[in-house]
Image (cartoon, rainbow, N blue to C red; front, side, top):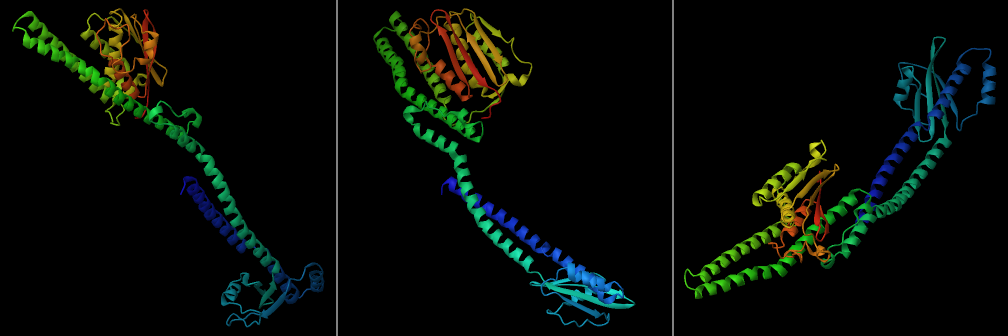
Length: 456
């Protein structure tokens, strides 16, 4: 069963239960109080009958005349006046056998009421001239019963009409509510392996649970896209990058076996073998890090990290490897609130990503001054790394995040083209992004943006 039908059916059932309970309450209280007015009319006639028939008063004839003239006679109205005997049950011949509880209430001095179907009784005890009397008035109330019957028909018809309307409203409501979900499903069906770069428009869903769902899909697509890219790049590039040093090593080993032990050719070949073996180790280490940093579904351990403190550690680490580096750390625009520069992250991975960026800035600027500036707007941390280096050619910018790609003007610098792709994977892992602004021959600015207070 479709979700819309389930919601509609549930909505209709709940509406039916609520309407039936409401109708039951209306019927119960209407049934209880519908005859209250009629009972009061009977009780008034009881008092008038006692006054006219039991009290000796010169005005009784006038009372009787006024009663007959102005007080309507009820359908099947009858009067019963008898002397009360407290020791025995009164023997009154009425249309219906009155229960003992009716007379018990009268003997207590209260006004008694009794109803059998549409026939009503009201009775009361009167003490007149030291003699007790019981006065009972009986009558029919066809209008009250008719009103209850009409009310019963209205409630039944209203119940079925309300259930039908609630079904229609529930169907419209469920369809309206599920429109964003259907749009998400429709958009997701368009995304296939060949167009994983497509994303759902989170803003169009109004910032509710649907937008959270769309954002969750986007995060999943980020992981899938990165995993696909990592796999494809590994297959297409790893074989070539690994084969090159192995070919050189094989050639140098062959050369070394032909040369004399201890000769210059022999030592040069061994040095080349050592260099290429180190290169091969570095490539394998980079490939392993690139694969591990991808969105492979593994939960990375995270902790609270202060980015300003992390940047100091990165600065020290880069200078330790390249003492000639000149790094200027700018923390002048940091907020006073410590939470604004603290985020939950995998410290080792994040440190590796930022270290790669800062180290590249120092290396490709021939160790000219490099500026690292940290800013915060409350929900987003921005780390801008500016160098005065060789810059990146415009034709190469779109490829710099591809593994093993190196810009056309980097032939004089040692590298393997893995640092930036590795950094991008790690930044994406932390729901962040990287922006680049560069001009060949004038330098490059790489800006890393990381969200604060993100739940992973």
